[in-house]
Length: 126
Image 1 (cartoon, rainbow, N blue to C red):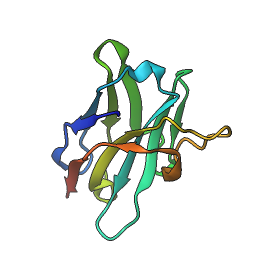
Image 2 (image 1 turned 45 degrees about the vertical axis):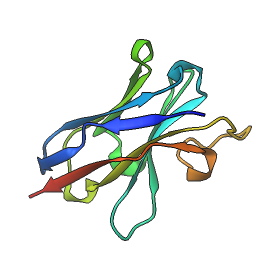
Image 3 (image 1 turned 90 degrees about the vertical axis):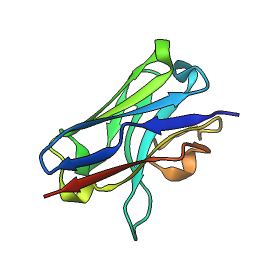
Image 4 (image 1 turned 45 degrees about the horizontal axis):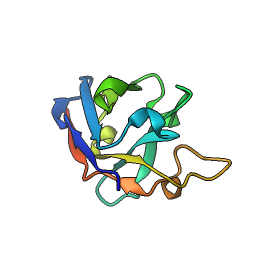
């Protein structure tokens, strides 16, 4: 069983920055992928960013150039740095990983992940 705990959410003005953290109960480096997802009210959960074991990063088009995913393997912690925040970035942000990734994994696809945190809320205001 993998436990993921997110933190760092909050309220921020448009254009501001925030860093989210996800602490895992397992070695994050051993995970094929660690991902960040978000769900806005009334919308489906969507992939935001994912970090591969080979240090490759994948980003949704909507956050490219604004969000950065990273990890500290010594702390088993995954980060998501959010900058140039927009109103439409308001959502609950979730950390996720899996023990059953498909062979041709799609890093931002929800169905690839079977371990989820409880989420941390990010609210962007004008």
